[in-house]
Image (cartoon, rainbow, N blue to C red):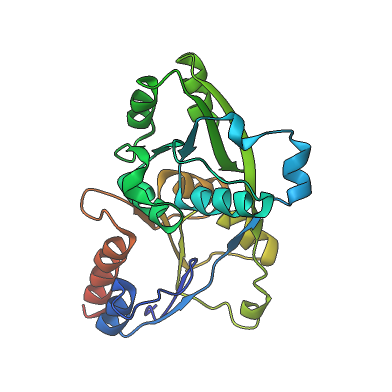
Length: 252
């Protein structure tokens, strides 16, 4: 089998300089982009039913850029003005910088970790007097909240958005892809929902992150390209290594 078509379960990159386009040119591939899942905000009615008051809290914990977006969108809909002395604790530097879309960054108290949950918790423990709000998705791990409880941190967890399956009906006429690339464990149920009779056969499946890799295996599918790894810290690098070997073997 010669690999010709690849489906990436993410939106199409906005820039032509994406490494995916470089792969397409290097190996003569047709790469399509189609998100398998979508993020929907909770309604104002749903949030109000939680009886949570945002301004009762003195600090916000953001574990993703998505959480940042939905938090400030909700504040706008509620006509809530977040005070200047609100503190922000972010999982990573990139998430912290993303706050610039919504606040004057240099005038706020912002703390961030190195992308690892425990690192952020250690920072939060130094501010244990704060009352934290954690905006999150309906699909999330409870490990973070459990560790905060163990550290005697006062917090409220609130679901501001949910993950739903995308409608992939436009792909049903021709789903003959040689490689499927997944990034979230929630994308595998979407595959099953949209294609209930799907059989992997010779299709190569790639997944990024331990949760996505586990979801592929748990669904009874064969995981051909797990990422990240020491050799391939990104999905494009993992694909590049696989494709290089694939086309090398074709020449033998």
